[in-house]
Image (tube, rainbow, N blue to C red; front, side, top):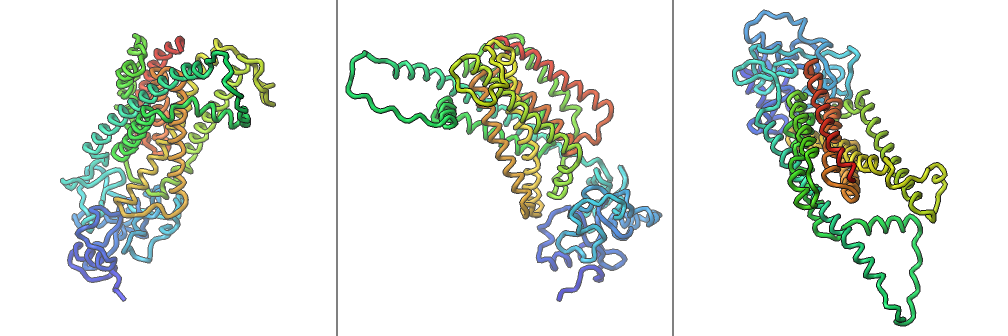
Length: 517
């Protein structure tokens, strides 16, 4: 039986780390450079210490406390381990659940859910600009939100600039690629629709000469099957351009999802709208759509608004474990946000169905009526619900689905990153797989509704409205779910709101295209 690392005699932190590594069967040379907790040589004995925000029983458990002792600072042990230093993540499978950690962990370490009622205590960290060190060669001693830099000072912990630029580049490439895919699909729809009248004319031609006994007509399929067949006939599924457009669209979305790993959602989301510039170039080339001054002005305002939103958006990047994601998902603001999105999706779907049904009832008196038709009043094609409501509803439906896709995809990226790079498998229960399924379902629904909008309306209207609504929802979702607005000041809130208002002004200019839809 191996001797526990805690309590072993030592002469350096490296020796304690090697003891722990030998016990767990790992190699200290190939492990992560940062850990939530590690063994350090304290007064000649190996002792397990943890970073700020982790559970503790006394100051001796806190790495920051021992750093101050080593630096010869006169500190009191009474102010280093207290309930006010705990956060939602403190009891969410932290330092005391790592391989090699002591079995006698503090209360709350095995709860697997946040405990915020003051019954647990957590470690305090060193404040900003304080002298710091890595205890046990891997445990950061700075307060939450700060990190010990190469000059041994606690500095603000923001995403590395290089990583942020990688995220910016990926989202710009992904947004442009996604936009090109949408326009290629629109091109396929246009070509497909232009062939349908010609095919129908060819089938209807007849010289009146009987050519033998007429074949018996095929039995008419049931109503639901007939409607499904009619919808499939309107889709250019066999068209290679449509397939290429779909692949390009999916690749663009995949690139955007990868970008979420390098930059916060509140930064990635508005940058996607910059791809509207691509739309101005591609849509006229592929789909023969004319660009007016209102279109250019609207897109310019959208870009300007996006720049303002980016500059004053929240910056908070971190790899969250499943336990923390669950708690963020259960938070009241997140529940309210998801409920609003769900109600908006249901209301938009009901609007689309009722308006299209009312339009069909207005065009034909022989339409088979259903029990719900008595509540629907027939409307003409010139109705504002048809001219204005339907185009915006289709674009909004796709963007609502896209907002959910981004939110759950960001969660999925966090889980995958933690599993692959931190070697902490997060896919050990049903919930992570549920997040994966929701991501796939909403992504497929997003593609469907975008295609339905492109099938019926101008890409220069559908794509900008889709991007703008999606962008705004993504920024709000990232701020609420991932708490990316927690460091916002009053000035940032005002300027962020200004940016959103400028974006909507651009949408107002683009809405002039509705008059010709």
